[in-house]
Amino acid sequence: MIKEEDLPESVDDIDYSLPQYFIVKNDEKNQKIYVPKPISESESVFSVDFHPKLDLITMGLVTGEAKIYKYSIDIENTCVATFNHHSEACRKLFFSDDGKLMFSAGSDMKLAVTDIKKGALKYCIKDAHTSPINTLIVIDDDRIATGDDEGCVRIWDVRQRKAIKSYNEHGDYISCFDYAPETGLLYSAAADGCISVVDMKKSKPSGVAVTEGLNDDLVSLTTMQDGQLLYAAGASGVIYEFDTDKLFQPKKNIKSLSTSISSMIQVRDGMLTYATDDGIIYSLDTKKSKLSNRLTDQTNEPIIDMSISRDAKYLASCSLENVRFYNAIGMFDMSLTEVVDKEEKKPEIQKLKKKEKKFEKSILNREAKANLEEAEKNVKKRKKAGGVQSATKKTKVLNQARKQFLHDLLVDY
Image (tube, rainbow, N blue to C red):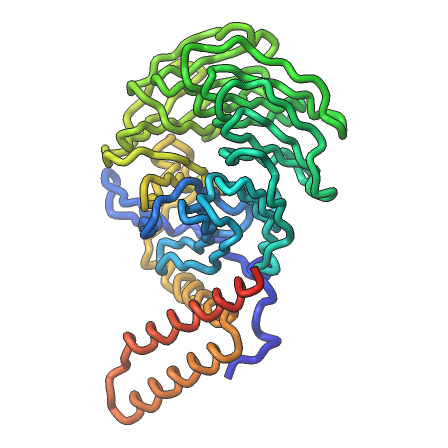
């Protein structure tokens, strides 16, 4: 029987840190590296983001849903929560830096803030913009920024639940943001080829500077070298390098290995990874301007968004209905901290599976728990009678319980 005091109050009470057993030692020349299985949805996925503290990943769907999965290499990826705060496409979402909140924005012009610990909507600003919101960024614990299809940028105070600055300096939709904490500058880019800069060092943002437009649709931004360099990816396949104190023209134009770029993120200082419309991921060593190897096979699915896990083990990408995981350590030549045989870690794997089972029970309501417990009792009875355990029935009960939990979670919204 499950006791209420044994159940965690929230996902914050569970440590999902995976030990270093994701590499299997076969021989000196051939090491197999395992990553979580792909997550397939029935609808298109627009955005992905890893949780900063737990082995969780969130994704925004064209239906407006925001889903959170617990990912693993030893147990099935599990959907632990689904939120229906948006009536149209959820275009962009991020976890807060402490992982307690999730911010999401979409085509319905809503800005939703979800309390992850409570598993509930904290608040929703229905008319955050006058046109569909295309992107957002978490600046710090108290501020975020959003950009819409008409080129409007708004900066929000999360505590006050209101916009503290709004400006319309772009002639096309805002495609991306980046924030340099070292300099306190917020950069935004748009399909008009322009980059705007706002000083965020003070509590009230000040000054807006806008560059002349490049003859390219800018899709991604990232800063490096303590905010001294800015990289902008163009849809044409060119990556533009700027000195941040000389944004009037690019310092360097780097031609990529593709004629189109759909997304770009920073892996670490000096290393970028970018994705293409035909589903291939490449890397770029910015210090050497070296266009290194093609990292993935062609999927013929445009990659819309990417994210790096908190421990830099995994790179995740979303394209159409799929979220795929890649081994970031092997892809970007990061140092391996430990290489062990999987057989040596069987006890740890068993502990992780027990923790997974406990977590599954913790998200169920009382009626669902009772149904699951009854199913488990029946399994034990069949075992004693010499029968064979029916995993199918248990799975059906668990799936039904999950659906009931999500219904109870979302009924008030």
